[in-house]
Image (cartoon, rainbow, N blue to C red; front, side, top):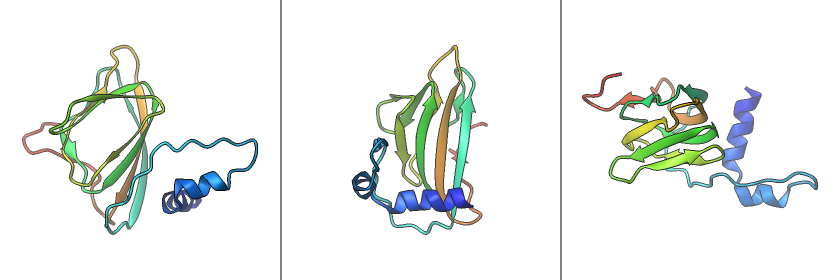
Length: 136
């Protein structure tokens, strides 16, 4: 519970406010700064997800805002209607609620990738929904 409260605090306080109060000997790098869409957030869920080489999620969307951070490896990421990009360790990403994700998979054939996903959801809401016609 303390971790969730801490993360809510991180989301609520702007990066510039943090930068002004960083003590000597500690460095801070803003990984992602994104305005929140108007929404009711009742649950925050944080997942650490590991994908085997070449594996990933089928086409899907999230009914809530998602913020992510690539811990290791590389991820091929494509929002429907946009060009694919490669996310590398240290990269962060944002997925708007209901935004179709065409591709999200490990871009490497010889090592796993790991990322952290933070879901800002409503109570009892699923965090991922497969696109119609997609098999799991």
